[in-house]
Length: 128
Image 1 (spheres, helix red, strand yellow):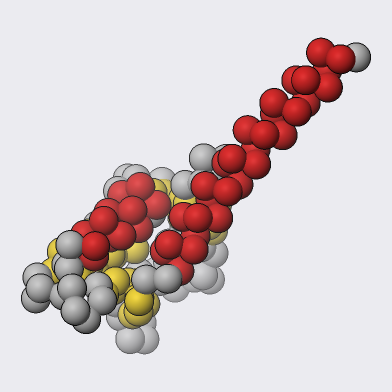
Image 2 (image 1 turned 45 degrees about the horizontal axis):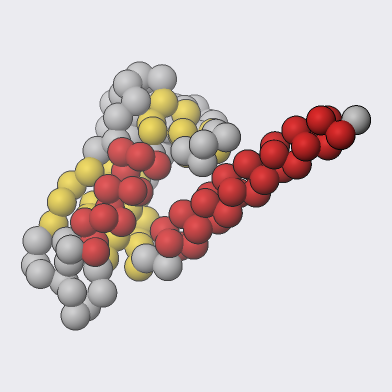
């Protein structure tokens, strides 16, 4: 019984650390000035009409994966005005035809570059 309690406590501590890290990541991204802009106003050229079935999943590791992107967007991340240096970076997260891995290859890169004064433009698009 004692080993079981020790094992449960270790698992709980591990999950508390993961949740704390995830909450910190969410707060740091939320604190950044950002604007989401649709890439197309109205109908998307050469698209097949259908419902917006976009699905966003957050894994155990805190990574956000988006599937079935049907409305492509551009999210602009702006540095603080006193840090802005007039440069910009376009970020196109990968994942192939199946999904878009938006956290590691999008948000995290934007966060690091805006610390350097670079405006980041992160495109959410799928080629499926």
